[in-house]
Amino acid sequence: MLTLVGLSAVTTPAAADDADIVAGAMIGLGAVDLSFVIRDAVLFGKNQRESFQPNDVAEVVWTAPQSAIYHGMLGAMYVDDGAEAFAALHVPAMITTATAAHGAWSLANPEAARRTRFLGATAFGVNAAMSTTAIAMYFTDRDRGQRVVGGYMAGLSLANGAAAYYLSVEDRASAAMWIGQGIWSSMLVVHGVSAAFGAFDDVDLSEMAGLTLAPGSMGAPIPGAPETPGVMLSGTF
Image (tube, rainbow, N blue to C red; front, side):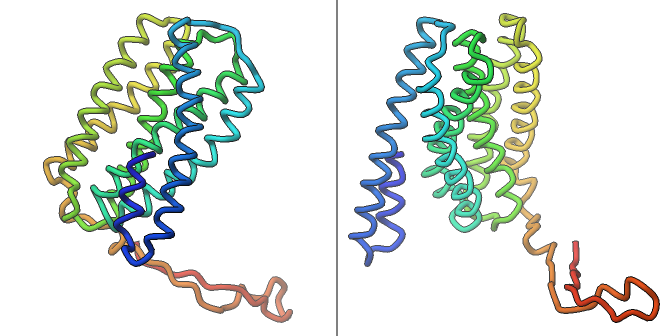
């Protein structure tokens, strides 16, 4: 969260007051998010199985909207700012996604081991943020630190995947979930390595695809009847 303070302060220097307001809001959100993370970490350490449902509901309601916003910002801003947007937003996207996933999982299956929920939700948050970044890579210029981000993605996903495959053996009750996380992480490792070595340097899907909407006609549903107005969709892919 605190990384957003720097982001908001440098985007528009003339709007320093607005930047201060945004920074204060982000710090406040981050403080509440941190309280959920601490609570989940404590329960993880104790490996408690019981679930305090009102807290889990609050966890989902508070962090799920933030997760959606951070992922949207990460994807959209990466297109323009590349590595700078990634550095500022990928950690908040991970944390809020993992916390929302933990709360939802606790509500759906409160009997599951706390350690499984905590580690599984964390792995999900990491993979989700890396996936948003991977998709955004296809729609941005290639001179914005993509190789550095790709290397970071490969390293983090390699660690995440290795842990998932290990836990698939140690936590047999949730083996399918861990194997799924491992496969997801493995795909991100491949993508990250490819990006780190410049495999996408000459690819920009934003220039390869285009759509055009124009007034048109859907034709006559019955022979002899008036044509039905509509919208014509055309494009190149």
